[in-house]
Length: 134
Image (cartoon, rainbow, N blue to C red; front, side, top):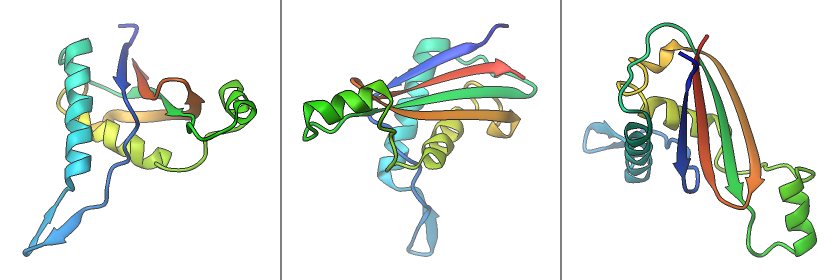
């Protein structure tokens, strides 16, 4: 197998912290919706391959350039001169993506033994995941 590519359109959402209430722990609605969207995109694009063994994931997070930025600053962002730092954190986005793909692309995200993440500015926000056997 050469690998799988999954594209998730839309703004990246970081996995939220667990919430506590009424004597129980739960996941917030925003995180649940984001993970459901990631699962839906994955199933539509690659099905449910349930890969075995160690895996490498290359993740590119495309962040929209704020509309309020000047033309010069926008061009700097799109050229890569101005780096995308800010929210959501790359580790929280990766947690959400990897957890969402459990039972679909792999049995458990513990199989991912190599993870490379790049966050950059782009015209269209989204996430691109490339999964290959390690």
